Amino acid sequence: MGQKSSVDPGLKPLPFQGVNPREALADIVVGDAIPTDERIWVPQAENVWFRPLCLNAGQGYWTNLLRVRRSGVLACHRHPQPVHGFVLKGRWRYLEHDWEAAEGSYVFEPPGETHTLYVPPDVEEMITFFQVNGVMYYTDPYGKNIGYEDVFTKIAMCRAHYTEVGLGETYVDQFIR
Ligand code: FE
View 1: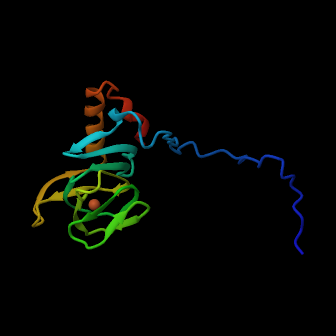
View 2 (view 1 turned 180 degrees about the vertical axis):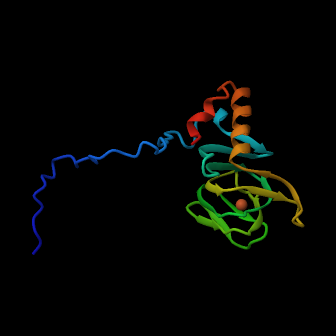
């Protein structure tokens, strides 16, 4: 049976006719999310860079692309809050686990997890999208704290790097909410 739709398929769908709350933040659309301009990658450690996408100061989280080139290591760190990741290119693993995250993989890092991200020498480059909540609590292999990152240190790193490469310290503002 089924009733035939009275909507002409040639017509455009009707946009929302209401008004968004005035307190709502502005959306972010990043067209060149995997940037062609090398200056947009912010150096983080040897063979490790990040590319900011959303730096949410109001809620204390950030989303970014992490790029690691062969044999790069993201130092041992603990997550008090969850992390979500999606591998866009290459593959990597944690020294603490026997699984490998390959291109197309989704990864959930639960609160309480401490691990060391490692890109094997046969992988030229890996790029992974991460949403990181709260802090990255860096430790030595025995759990002793040796530093941290949060959305504010990420913003500060971006400002310093974008100033240095000529994009200007306000370049990062477009990603901050
Ligand atoms: Fe992690």
